[in-house]
Every structure is written in structure tokens, then in C-alpha cells.
Length: 344
Image: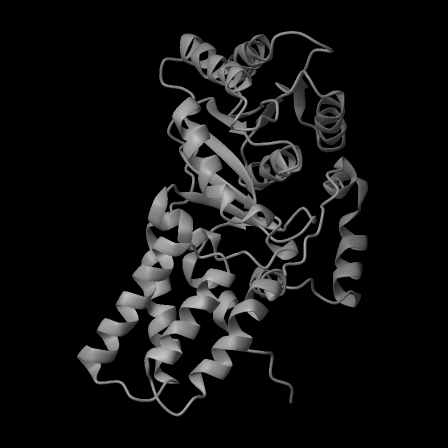
């Protein structure tokens, strides 16, 4: 029913030209002749096209009916479940819609679209909490997730995001079990002038410990600590990630200052279980939702909001360096529920 799109997690997707490689005059000339890149809103809307198709096509049919009745509400429930909003969130949204219909004496189904957008915004609003890395120095971010979620690529994008804010960044290649992860971080660090602390093998906690010590010595603003991919059912392996957290606390009693869980939007309701399992082991403080462009299951954020609410720090809708951005609920709901583009 749903279309799955596997993302290729390669450092080449992260590389961007260094400013020193391009003269100012050449840059200005290129800017004058090259069409501007799509805005984040445009990329978000494009990225959510599959989820939007799951919602807006049936919603358009539902909201064009002649009256609001139980049959319409039943079909609306099916539509929301199909978009992976989850049973709890779907029931909450339906209850809110029924209440609005009764309170405002709504009769025209077209009026429900605005109500749905408003209630969905209300549901997701608590998840919009931008990450502030200025409270500590170094600000230690521990990053976890299952293999294939896009964790390593997200770390590179996050590093570039913080660099663009004028922050110095250091990467800790704590995934000592997967050589490809270390090589990806090293390659990205070399291209963008970011130091990477890594070992060919050994204890992930030791790598992170060395990275924090180096960050202190070099006056680094942000440390991004990678960890090995783990399934939440692998309890003995989850304990190794918990050990990394404990080691961070030994070197800095206030850390880690953020524990980010990277989630692949393709997994739908399994994302809820991952949040719960990782939170139990490492106390997740924020989420990064990737690959929203490859799924019809973007509604999973509604399920997370109801069952295991955690701040959604960033969402990703592509492989480009700028396709990971802070989560903004108004933009998300607009991109999710907007109709087809109008042509002149």
C-alpha cells in the first residue's frame, strides 16, 4: 500500500563547496545567472507529497460531500489511520472534530478542513521546541538510532547546521562497530574542516570520552557523538549505549545536554516503539525524523505527540545538505494538508 524508498547514506551527499574555493566575484556572477534554489517550504511540501496524497485525495472527496454524517466521520477515521496517525491520535482528532461540529453547528463538510488543520496544529505544537546549544560549552549531543535510519548522514547535516550558526563543531565516531560510519564521518570532517575523533576499533565510550576532552582543550562549542546502531529489542546492545551516556556524565556531570534519537519515517508506528525503548535506556530528549520524502507515513508525528511526546528538533525531506531543518509545526501542517498546486 505504501511506497518505500531506501536512502543511500553517503558522505558525498553532504559535501558542499568551501568558501575559500570560490572567489567572491565568481560567486556573485553565478548567483546572478543561476535560478534560486527552492525554499525550505517548497522542499517540505515536495517531501511530504506522498503523505499529502494519502490524506488530501480522500479528504477532498470527503469534504466535498453534501453533509456531515457518521459515514463521513468513519471514512475520515480510516483516512487518518492510513496516514499512520495512530489509533490514539486519530480518536483525539475525531473527538475534536465532532465537538467542533456540535459547538459551531457545522453542516458543510468543507468546513472540516480548517478545523482539522487547527486541531492537528494544536496536537503537534508541543513538539516544536528548537534546540539551543548555547547553555553549555562544549554542548554535548549524543545521537542514537537503529541502523539505516540515516543517523550518520544526519550528524553531518547537523554539524553543518551548527557551523552555519557560527559554532565550532567536533565529531566523535562512537560507532566503532561499523567501519563505514567512521569513514563517512572522517570524509565529511576533512571536506568541511571539522575535527573527528575516531579509533579503528575499541570501546565507543572511550572514543566519546576522548572527544569531550579534546573539545574542552580546543574550546569547541558543540560535540556530536555518534553511537552504534541498535535495535531496541537488543537489550544487551542497548546497554552499551547506556554506558556511553554514563561515561559522558563522568566527564561532565551536566551532560549529555541533548540525546537525539534519529527515526526513519518509513517505519510508521514502529517509530513510537523505538522512542519508548530508547527513552528507557538513554533518556531521549529530542527527535530527528528523516526520510519524510520517501514515505506515506508522515502522520506518525501525530502518534508520537499522543503516545510518547518528545521535542522534534529536526525533520528531513531529502539527501541534500539543507534538507534537514528545525521542525516548525505551522509549516508542517500546511505542507501536509495543502491541496494540489494551482497553475496560472
